[in-house]
Length: 185
Image (cartoon, rainbow, N blue to C red; front, side, top):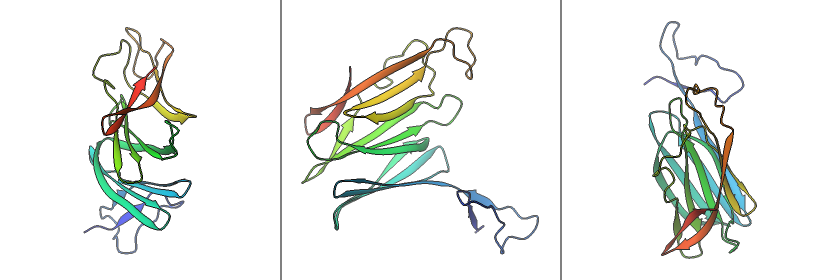
C-alpha cells in the first residue's frame, strides 16, 4: 500500500519510503470540530471518490450521544452548529457540493434533542427546476435562518460568467412529524 501525504500540511514532502519515480497517492480530508454550549461535534470526511462517507460524532459534556455515518454525493465544504428554532437544542448543518463544474450545493442536517437525533429535511431543494440555476451555491447560517445564495445564468452565459445577478433564499426550521424541515420564505 502506498503511503499518503496530507496536503493540508504546510509543506509537501515525499515520504522516506517512496522511491524516486514511484507513484505517491495524495489524500485530503475535511475535518471540523464545533461547539454549542456543552455539545461538541466532530465532522470528518474523506475527499476521494464521487460519493464520500461523512462521520459525525456528537457529545454532550463527557457523554457520547452518537457516532453515525452518512454517504454524501460530492465534497464537504462546510459545517455549522445553530439553533434556528430557538429551542436551546443544537442543529448540525453539513454543506456539500457536487463534483463537476456546477458545484450544486446540498445541506445535510440533524437536530440533537435530549433523547434522540432528529433528521432535518429540505423538501423541494432541487425537485423543481429554477430558471437560470446552474449551481455554485453558497450556504451559511445567519441568526435563525439558513441562507442559500446562487448566481442566475441567462441564455448564452458560460458556467464561469453568470450575468443574471444572484438569488437569495432563506429557510426557517419547522417541526415536521418526528423530525424537522427547512421551509423557504
